[in-house]
Image: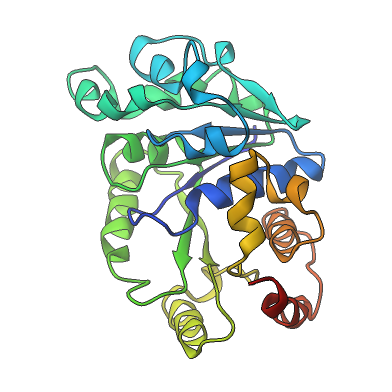
Length: 270
């Protein structure tokens, strides 16, 4: 059975969707079969991979609320090893609709029970909230990846997320672990980035990934073209760092001194 990773942070704008898209593609490039579940009503992962969310007949909403089969909605994106279960605006009302449903915390888990052995990795792009959609993601997942932006108040509110993770682990999903903490949007020109990196490593210790994702114009541009960064610009610093993150998750060695080289490249690309 593959690994199911929920990408969670109740803050918006920390790089959840960017990470879901580009980590998923990087893992697929390493010959791993990957299913990305867009579990955010904004459906940015869907459009960011070139899927027309307005033209969908069914989405993850129909699986969660109406009991449709998830195989009906899965689409290949860019390479055969990478697929997505798209989202739509309909998911906006799911938080309210879930309240009255039986086993409301297990709807996604039950929908995936026949699929999870078909993939090496299932990534869940969670919404920026701690409501029932995120609870479903955490109940389904084997681990949680937490992106943290290298900005002021980066760790503010994380105690609430960690409390939610612990509550889910104690009551709904005892197997749930923290996959790691990913520092994103690093600007190596500022002292603030170094301060946030040090603060995160003091707090989370070895749970912080060695790979740090920098601010990058190319990373920001890629979703507008419906492409992962590896397709949009495979030589960019964003592509290199997400490939490094995939290697870390797979337990592969990452390039020694890579961080120093990325810092050099950062100035030219930021």
